[in-house]
Image: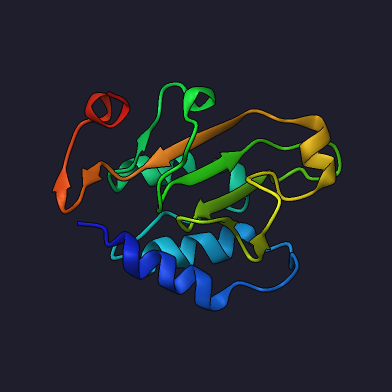
Length: 138
């Protein structure tokens, strides 16, 4: 079972003040610090399948989610000049990748202007008990 507290702690402890262009590396390491192993990908945009393999569920309507939950992982599609997309995790307060994203899930002004599509992945548990995606959205 995945431990989101350990994953978030790892991410917070290793986050920088600015982007290093290594979001997938930092978020993958944080997810793995929580006790699962992800398949490696070159691009952040490709990590959705790896998250699903270890038990994360793709929330069916991410645009309807008003408040992300601690441990949610966002996979953001590429925009011009950023061919690998972006990957970040919600700490419970802010989105973090290789840096602390104080302005939201999109990592920079070019992403905020373009508003590319994204998917939110959530490990299916409430407290310490696994649940289904339909229960998470209820």
